[in-house]
Length: 282
Image (cartoon, rainbow, N blue to C red; front, top):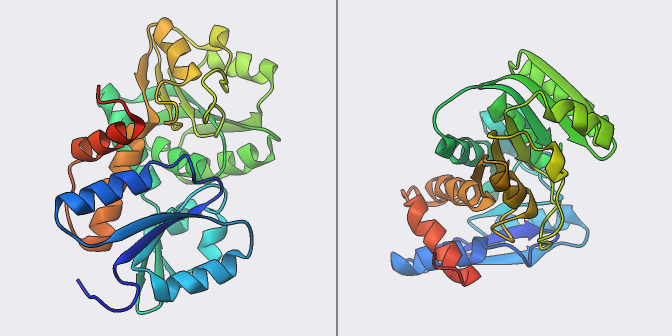
């Protein structure tokens, strides 16, 4: 690994970032393997272009989170195949000022969902149509027959629905996240995915009323703080298979480490680092 200026620094940029477990996960991993790489979260208020230009010369790479995953695609020099198709970037590698963007969210999502077992789904409800929602839709297009997408305004959901059809899903529909729409959709699905920030740092907030959660479906919540979100608690009471957002985070972290350093990390090890940082060793 080269040791030129900035080559030992990794960053996370977004807003907010204070909730992120990524610094704890990566720093514990680097310490464990005796690597002097630093990872730091930076909250970006504005002037994303200037931040990316600074990162070109002062990092070996960085992660991008809410709300910049879509905007990041226009600020880098090269996109890998998946990031280009999805239209969102969450991981960037910097080499001599050249920025290459990747999307590892879809891989993290896919591997997290596999914890419910290898299976297909008749219908899936995807809540949220931002960068994380795009990654989920890209992954789900391969394994669901019908994909329903909801968002606050409905316009981003409709746009993502059209993309999902291009990506291979048989039938897709994007609408506004109203109670009537959610009620109609929920009875048609056996998979629910929350790709919105609803529930972040709010243990009583949920993107879907408990009464609308179908019994014995699979529910994946990308929010990992709290680990047991209101959505997951309600789903568990319905006998659903639940998957917390920390699994997605650690699986995409494995991919990021591979991209940046060419190393193979253990997702269980990374998850333990995150749980330690949360004060939960269970």
